[in-house]
Every structure is written in structure tokens, then in C-alpha cells.
Amino acid sequence: QVQLVESGGGLVQAGGSLRLSCAASGSTFSINAMGWYRQAPGKQRELVAVITSGGRTKYAASAKGRFTISRDNAKNTVYLQMNSLKPEDTAIYYCYAAAPSYGMDYWGKGTLVTVSS
Image 1 (cartoon, rainbow, N blue to C red):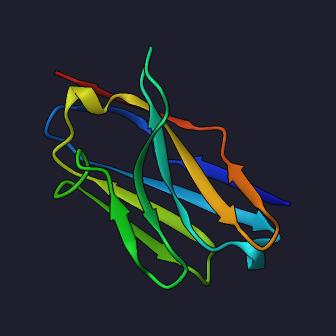
Image 2 (image 1 turned 90 degrees about the vertical axis):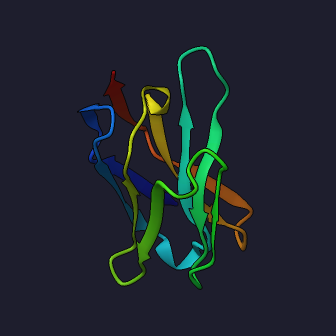
Image 3 (image 1 turned 90 degrees about the horizontal axis):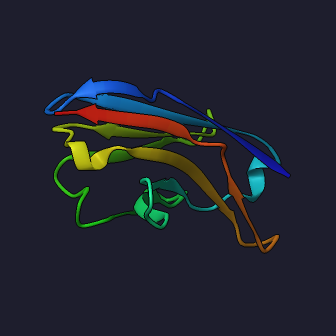
């Protein structure tokens, strides 16, 4: 089992920045990709960014150029630096970890990001 704990959400004005963190614990040796999804009110959960254990990244079109995902494998922690935030970025942001060798995906409980206009 893997446990994921997010931190760093909050209220910020449009144009501001936030940094989200997600610390993994438990069977972290099984983790390959880690990343962030978000779910806005009334919308489906969507991918924001993902990073593999080797450092390859993938971003949603809405995140490219504004968000940066990074990972500290020694600390089993993934980060999401969010700049130039917009009101439409308001959502609950969920940390995600994939453990393909176990056939498991893990999710954190989420952290709320609110961007005011």
C-alpha cells in the first residue's frame, strides 16, 4: 500500500503562485509515475501533469508554460509549481501515484486551490 498526503493548497489572487507538495509513504518502491489531477465543481477529474521515476513529464494543455512538475525520488515527494494562476484553475488538486507492478493506482485526499479574480 501507498499513502499520499498533499499540502500547499490555499487561496490566491489571479496571477499569483502556489506550490503543491505530495509525500508518498508505504510501499514507495513500487511507484513509477506520480502526478497531479484536478476536479473543478461540476466537472470531471482531469490530468494536470505527470512525471515518471526517470523524470519524463507530461502536461495538460492548460498547464503548459505555467505549471512545473518535479520530483524528489529520495524524499518520495512530487511537487507542482503553479504560476500565473487563473480563476479557472480553481479546483481540488489530487496527487496520484501509479504502481504498475502491483496493478494499483493510488490517490491522495486532495487539496483545495482557490484563485480569486
